[in-house]
Length: 427
Image 1 (cartoon, rainbow, N blue to C red):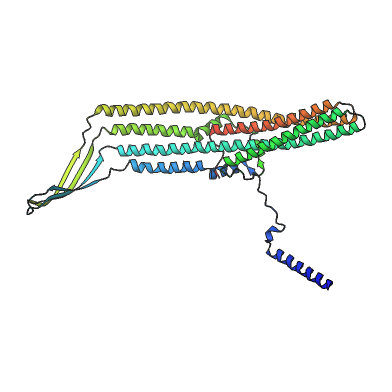
Image 2 (cartoon, rainbow, N blue to C red; image 1 turned 135 degrees about the vertical axis):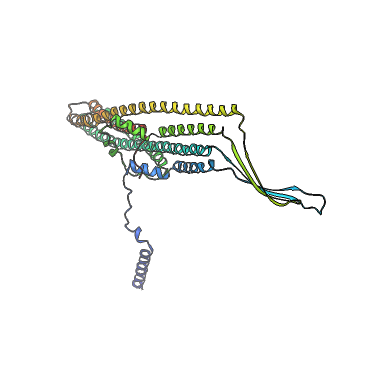
């Protein structure tokens, strides 16, 4: 009876297991977690261009401005006016009534000039959209390099903690054989605890940098960020651009220059608008009338306005001319500012590039070569712990300064790209 019960229980267990395996999704059994590919800066910029709401705001503003030329250059609405001209008291007499159609239109090219002014506004809003895009791209690039710095600092701190742990074990081993004091062990344990505390703080800063990077790209702040390919951007800075080529790019790409050019066009169009107001407006009225005495007939009236307030017209022309002179002076100042901005950004980029190369080719190799002989000498008893600790701190300092030099190069690259008004082609 017991054997039969055991067989029944085993059968039920097999059935239950088969049922569970049947209802479980096949993807949940041994399915590998897909890894998001590494993210480059051009990819991050493309994501920001598509996701940031400010880009949609700029596009909507430009689309609205494109409708303005049709609005300002159209004729005024015509007037249809039915009228009872005479209603006799005597019910036996007929009522005089009429209906007219009236249209006014200018006798100058003021509609054309208003259209030109509105078309200049389109270019202005497109330039402002370019400024918005450039600012977004600069914010994304800054967040990109800041996050890359936090992650590389975390790697360095991890290696520092590992090295400090090795020194703790080495000091403890020497203390065990009487070759070192307990103070050496305690000092290295303090140094290891300090580094672990720095690592925890850096992890918090890194998570904050990830949230900021996601925000600048227009994504959810809590979204995981894959590995960053910052080295590709830095490798492209090895060959520094030429000053003349940079100035030419800035003159063609800077949104401020296109905006100033559009403002000059609009100002000159406004001058033409004010001058056109010296010409009169024409009005044509046609209609049909019916009287009790003469019956049905037609009406026609042609009239013109008389611009007699010449003081107001002259003041309008002088005001528009002053605005045009202001726009031209503003463009001249903008050109000088852009020239100085490009030169300063290029020199900053050159200095940051030299500093970055000095760390990567000279300082880092020297600092790395100094730590192993110091640890070997301490293990053999020929060097005190303070010498090993100083060599380790020198290595750690150079490592962190190297990462900061890399970030400084990235920031100098951002400043240069902002100066020329161009971060790369849109995908």
